[in-house]
Amino acid sequence: MTFLPGSSQSLHRFRIQLPLLTALLAFVCISVAAVAQNPAPSNTATWSQEDGLRIVNEVQKKLGGMVNYGVFDWITFGIQGKTIVLKGYASRPLVKTEAGNVLKKIPGVAGVDNQIQVLPLSPMDDRIRVEVYNRIYTQPALRIYNANQGTIRSALGPGGGSAVRMSGSIVNYPPRGFHAIHIIVKNGRVILYGVVNRESDKSIAGIQANSAPGAFGVDNDLVVENQPGT
Image (cartoon, rainbow, N blue to C red; front, side):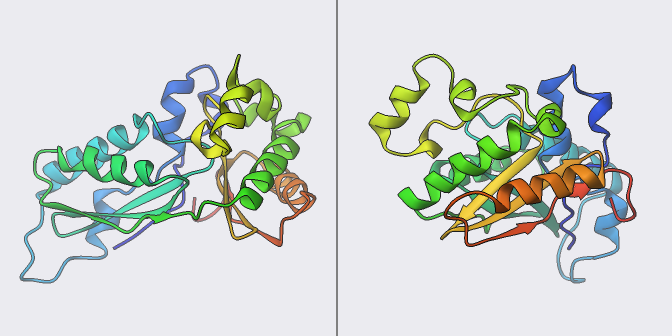
C-alpha cells in the first residue's frame, strides 16, 4: 500500500481555478499502477483496473469537496484490497469523521480504515498555528500559495476574529480558501505539508515556520514540483 505526498499537478497552471486545487494538491494521487505494486493478499478481493481508476478519482473528489477540511489539516489515502485507508492529521474530530463518512458512500468501497490522528486541543498549539500562518502567508514569495494572500485575520473574513475569540480556538474557524502549504501543529511541533513550485519556496516556508514563537521544532515535508519522486 502506497501513501504519496501530494499531486504532480503544477501550481501555476491552476492559480485561477482555486476550487480544483484542493482536490489536485491537498490529497495524495494514487494511480492503479502504484496500487498494483503493493498487491493485497491473495485471499483479499480487489477491484478491476477500470473500477480502481474510478474509485481513486471518486476518493479524490470526495476528499477535495469536504467543507471542514482546511489549512490546519492534512489527509492522505491508500488502498488495501477494496478498503480505503486514511492517514494524516485532523484539527477537529469532525474532520476525521467527515472524511470517513464521505468515502463510505462510494460504490464499490467495502470499507474505510480511518487512521487519521485527531490533534489535541491546545491553546499553545493554536497560538503557534496563528504565528506560523502569518509568517508563511505574508511572505511575498509565498503569497501565490494562498487564495487570501494575507494574514490570518484577513483570511477569517468579516466577524471571523470575533467568532474565534468566542470559540477559543482558531481550528473551529479556520482561514477560508485554498492553501497549498498545510500547517500541522502537535504539542508545539510543526509539520509542513503540501506542494510548492521551487526549492527556494520550500526553504523560505521552513525558515518562517522556525521563526514562530513557541514552536519546538519544524519538520519541512513540503514537496517541490517536478523533482524526482513527485
